[in-house]
Length: 311
Image (tube, rainbow, N blue to C red):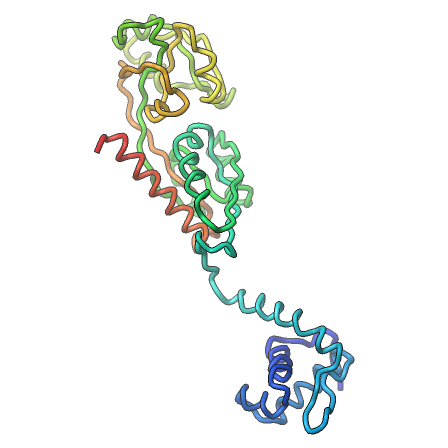
């Protein structure tokens, strides 16, 4: 018989386990719904591949060899792995046997506003859930990392949705307001003249991208402001401007986290709101665990919107 060492398939291994569990070739044939000659032929093939008789006569029945005993747990595990290839993975966040290990692209704003709530939520769950948070500075950087698998998900400003393999779901809209140390501005400022006369701190994520929607809007009105500080993260800014008259124009939702303790007033420069979204590659669209994660983030975003509206 010409047998290749790798001449094994699901049916042959299942046949072996059935004979082992039933202790009989005849009983295995009945359970499998095939003729006894088919089972005997399959067992003979397996004996040649393995190089062991696997089952030997013992009185009127058969008994497995020591090698057959050793094979059983490995084959059971192998068959379960093969079965899993034909099933879409399920995910139950309350099942300690389930896991989700996800790399999320987000900057410190998204971490403070969205991911802090998400991380607190997963601490009460039984599943093995872990996150890696990686910064995302540019639109193309996010798209490239989602494509090559360096990111599983990204929470960023709306990038425009012009990549056909990147899926996107809107989370919430954001606006800005002015933050200041009340010790230096005891009365809430907010006029355009005051705004232009003040010293400002700005967030600039990238050295090559110093354009500002605020400065562009001021320029259209023939006005300008003086920027005395630029930093790359929201977290550093409040420590730097504390105890100074410098003001910062930042997202409203930072008032309860990064900018807690600062006084606020409306920004006198009228700007359109901007949208935050979660984005993912199409290969993760059907993943049960990723679907659960995206739904959790969306629910958190809905709570954020309700708090902002005061409902």
